[in-house]
Structures are given as structure tokens and as C-alpha cells.
Length: 202
Image (tube, rainbow, N blue to C red):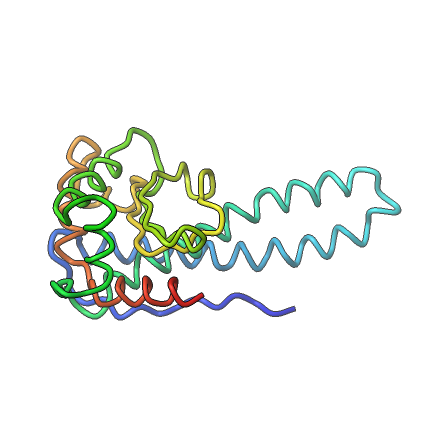
């Protein structure tokens, strides 16, 4: 069976996000990769017991349910860590992504303000910027945990992790707004622009 591979990211020293926090966060990502692979193996194993064990189909069902959590945890973190890799870079004034953001929200600053407000939603989850391939437009939304509320037929362009593990070594929960600001200070917009271009081409 083909296995998911853990990606190694090129992240240097970040402003406002400590090396310790990144190291611990990467361990969590590695766990999602491992668990996604393990669940697929277990599904095959328990499917072999379904004729002899009346309980096995329920185990298989729960494994499938859990897979979406582990898989999305893996993929969301890959988008997150890639956007912090290669050093902070600004988004060009004439970039197509900036143009589409302005077309959708009126100004780049207005979108940024609204996106940061989404990130401060109470609870654990992710602030997401998607490209809707059907409507050919950008959408910002909140995703509970990491798998509840993902937008159908949309491609993830930007992902901001708002679980406490993303900032707990640097900021108390009452100061998570500082973490959001630090995240944007460290963004490599070239990577995000590439995500957008790939999404458009799909």
C-alpha cells in the first residue's frame, strides 16, 4: 500500500514564533502522517475480519471516520508550514492573487482584517482561504477542529492554525491575537501565490 510521506520544511528563525513551538508543532504534524498511514492499514486488517466478527464492520466505520481527522490534520499543516518556509516575502502589487482578493473584498487590507477576525473565532480550528474552482472566486472561512466545515470542491490557498498547540509556548490563549500578527509577519506570500496559481489550473 502506498504511504503518505512526511514533508521536511525549510523554516528558519521566525519572528514571534519560537523554535520550540515550531519543533513541537512539527512533531504533531508527523503524528498525523503516521496515523493516516496506520488507519489505512488497520482498515484493511479489520475488513478481513468482517465475516467472522460481527463487531468488525463497526470498527471499520469508526476508522473511516477518524481518517478524515488525521488526513486533514496532515494536509492542513503542510499548507501552514510551507507558507512559513523560505523566509518572509511580500505579495507583489500586480499579483493575480492580490487582484482577486481586491475584486472579492474591495481591498487587500479589508480582506486581511476580516481574515484575522475569523482567526479569533472562539474554539479550536483553522482560518482558511480557499479558491472555489467552480465559481472562480476566493472564499474565507473557519474550519472546526480540522475536518468539520472544509469547503467542497475548493482548494486550500492559505491555512492559519488556531489550535492552542500552534502558539502555546509563546502566548497564553488570552494573547492569541499576537500569534496571528506574528504569523502574517512571517508569511512567504510567494508560496501562497503558487498555491493560488495551482488551484486555478486544476
